[in-house]
Length: 147
Image 1 (cartoon, rainbow, N blue to C red):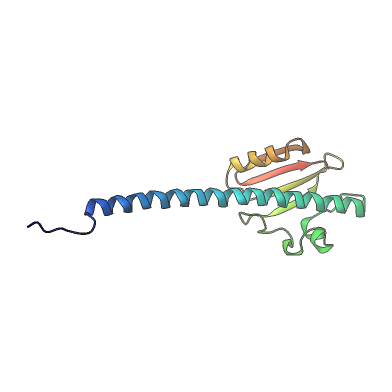
Image 2 (cartoon, rainbow, N blue to C red; image 1 turned 90 degrees about the vertical axis):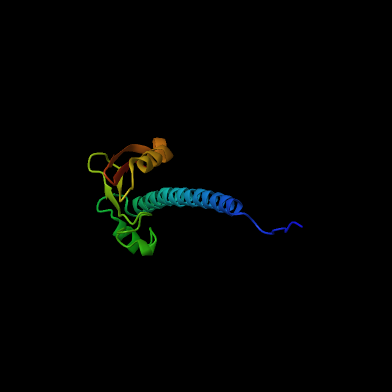
């Protein structure tokens, strides 16, 4: 009489564990991409918020002289939590804005701690024709607007 055995073989268990590991790695990679992409979208929204604050400043003051993130937060043209813009970007970099001395009515937005040039290119693509110019240099993105 033959004795029957119940259960799984070592090979079957190993196969299931391997498949599970590959699925977990795939989900983790997708999660990293989603997190990174959401930071880029947050950056786009933040720059749009800065632009809106500058527009309000122009309507209230008529001139761009002395414009700074801190001044805009003091008069509720930017979110109060932004303070002077230090550490507020999605990668914990700084936001600064300034009047562009060479182009009347234009202003510069600088974002620090940009992780790579691909993010800078995506921002340039997103803002497209609304940009006068832009540049990226080792973690720092400069966007020039004339709105």
